[in-house]
Image (cartoon, rainbow, N blue to C red; front, side, top):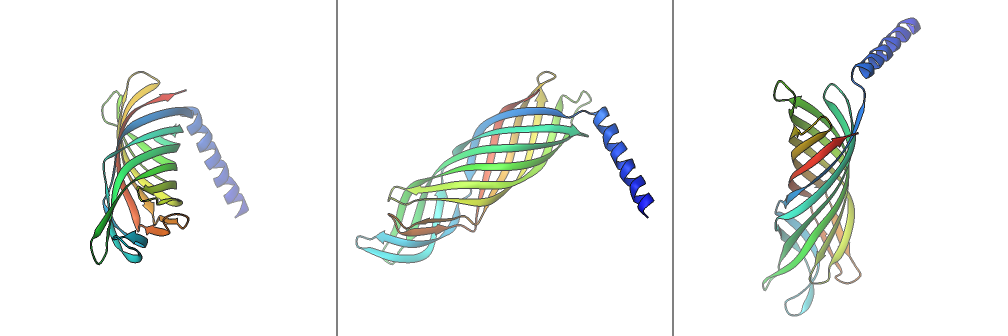
Length: 222
């Protein structure tokens, strides 16, 4: 049994060495920018509102988001067979309106949602033509998202949450080292909860934040 295990391990090692020789690891870096859309959603709001008197409410509110922007940087490596592994840092910013219903009226608060995400991605590149200059990319990623939620009524809170995403893109080779990229990400943040007990004395809780991000960029190997 021990001999069989040793032989299998040796065979796997030789296969990996052979693969590495056939397709050496190549590092790359990329930068992207574009459009970010946060999907409107119901949230749980607990806090104080003025109507015109100040009182405590606990109710379902609606978060409505304007289109925003995103910047994304990647650093990764091509490991052979069309596979890539990369680290990703992203920044997203969207304005919002938070509509909080009360017994007398609906109070609407303007504000913003700003996010910094740190993701690890696994992707597969598939050639779309014979030369391989045009490729389709499919992938997924998991990581963390630091979101900051602010409103013009003084609410200001931030939260680290688990995040995950699906990625679809196309890449066109400009030369041997440089690709022009167009990527779509469906990005989700799991159960962020924003608490401000200093000024607004309120809590805003999402089941999930869903986002659609469309970017164009450049990726260069080195």
